[in-house]
Length: 212
Image 1 (cartoon, rainbow, N blue to C red):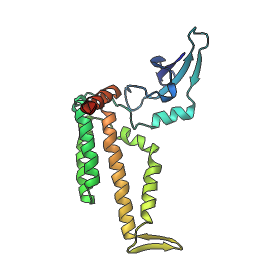
Image 2: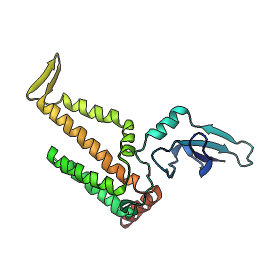
Image 3: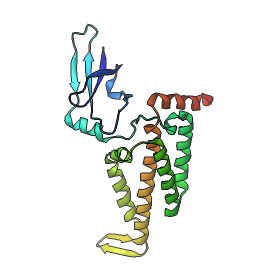
Image 4: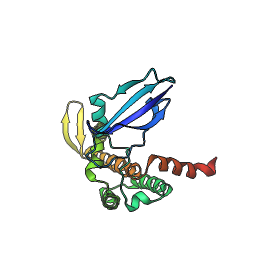
């Protein structure tokens, strides 16, 4: 009939029901973490109408490890000024940040972005270690972006082997694009780290209401 989403913090933590859904595979949980050292265990229990067909669907050790490592999209509870801002303000600020990232065309410009981002992270009180912990999920995309740009530009040859050539222009562009992607991920993740999923949903709904 439905599924119960279960959660506990640590192997010996207290199991609690955080939600019920009829489609657990597409469910996005609103889990509030107490700190960066939390060890989340998430499980699913299938429940029939007569309660006779209950069964636990435990998350494997590999899935548990992935949940702990993927911090992108998670909410980090704090009582900072950034957390208390209206969700609509943060959504619009994030959109402006994305536009700014794509308008920057020099490393000096990125330096200013890094400075502003550092101030924002400091005010939000979200640990830097927690933010970068989530990069395990996207490190392949960053490396792929770097490698693809490395061999796509003609110019001053730095290294050549058979059909592979690395130029100064290619190396410059690779570093530039990789840095842009990293800053884009960090900046946009600050939105979800400082905004509860329900507040984010309500904010988007209010912003899009004039278009309905």
